[in-house]
Every structure is written in C-alpha cells, then in structure tokens.
Length: 79
Image (cartoon, rainbow, N blue to C red; front, top):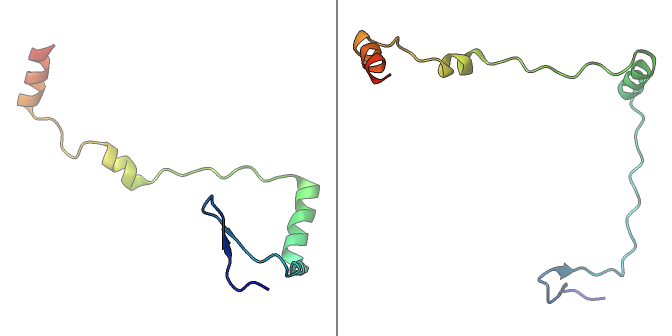
C-alpha cells in the first residue's frame, strides 16, 4: 500500500485506489418531504417566487435633489 499519492504529469494527484469505495449513506425518511411531495402531486407546483424590488435600491436610482434652475437652463441651451 502506498503512503504517498502519485503526482501525474498533468499536475493532478492520483490517490491510492486499493481501498474499496465507502458504502452509500442510507436516506432517512423525512415526513416533511413526503408531505410536500404528496401536495405537489395533488395540487401541482407552486408558482415561482417573485422578487420584490428593494425600496432602497429604487431610491438610489432616483436623484437625491431636484435639478436647479441654472442646470435646467444649461440643458435647454445645449439642445
């Protein structure tokens, strides 16, 4: 049995494969998951979640201050 892993020319490490694979973990029965699956079968999938816009992000998109009269006049002169 090798104690050190082999390093291949590609840079990947090859582990010792003499050991058998570990057993797959048994799935524990979950009542909650069973009830949810039963409800999905009877009623159908729930609608996808809708994202509610964050009021802080909406406020950040708007300018904090109204444009001054001089700014408005400069814009109208540029047009």
